[in-house]
Image 1 (cartoon, rainbow, N blue to C red):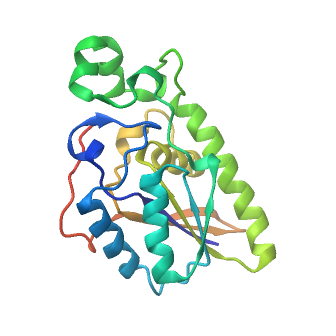
Image 2: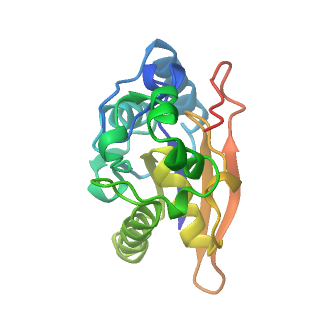
Length: 211
């Protein structure tokens, strides 16, 4: 199986430094352009099905990709973004002032961060890996060997780390930009191999988020 791991296109939340979580920021104008460039780049990739987070920024990216690939879009809750509880929809600079200790942990070892009412990075890893493994086992029986997963930075990083068994701390060792794609391949003898990480050659303009 070949799996395209796609981060959604840019939103106002990315550009203006918000913690997004499950706050439903839609694609901005540049995000739509990014998604269209991504779709053209992957037009002949052989993607047969697209699994998307239910949030609009991912779902819109997935639908734009579907227009070029003719692949069905399926909403998959297992790839929803991390629930950041009281941090969601708030400026990162505000959180830095209000939660200095927790913010420092976010930019150094977020795997150990615990916020009341929020999901942990390791919980995201568990559910996203479980969801991918279910698809990997079931889809080839339906003749589906190439898929795309359109989701979020805070899902892609723990998913990649979990699949490849990268030890903690892993979060800041993996980087994925908006509208980038990475490629995983699964082989029954070797397991998962990361063939491509954070491909952005199809993009002309994107904001690099440092944290």
